[in-house]
Length: 145
Image (cartoon, rainbow, N blue to C red; front, side, top):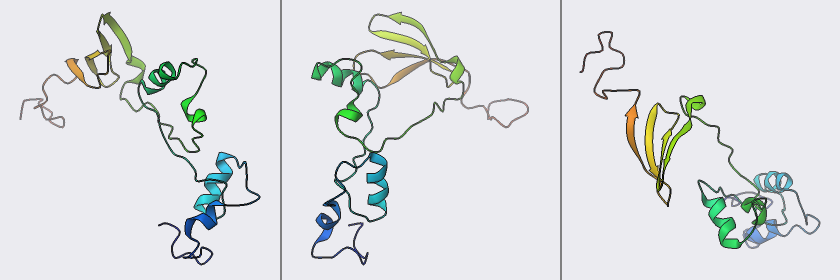
C-alpha cells in the first residue's frame, strides 16, 4: 500500500483514516488528486480512467443519452490522459473512401489503410511511403540490405 511507512498514517487505521476527511466533502478533482498524492485526507479516492476509440459513442448509445453527455463526468473521473496526435504526418490524415463495411484512410503515418467499421481494431496496409521495408534507411545507395 502506498501509504505504509508514512508517519501520519496509522497502520491500524490504514487507508480509511486518509479517505474520510470530514471537512473535505465536495473537493474538486485537482484538490482531491493533490491531497491524495500528498498523503492528506480526501473525500474519496481519485478516479483515473480513459475512454478510447469508439467507446464513448457506444456507451452513449447503450445508456440512451445524447452526445453532450461525457462518460468521464458521469463516472466522476478525476485524472485523464491527454494525448496529442503523434503521427508523423498528422496534416495528411484523411478519409479517402467509404466502402460499406470498410473505410480507406490515410492514417497519418504514411500509410493508406483499410479498416472495418464494426468492432475492428486492426488495419490492412494498402500502400506505404516506405516501399521496401528491407531497405537500409541510413544507406546512401538505397540498395536493399
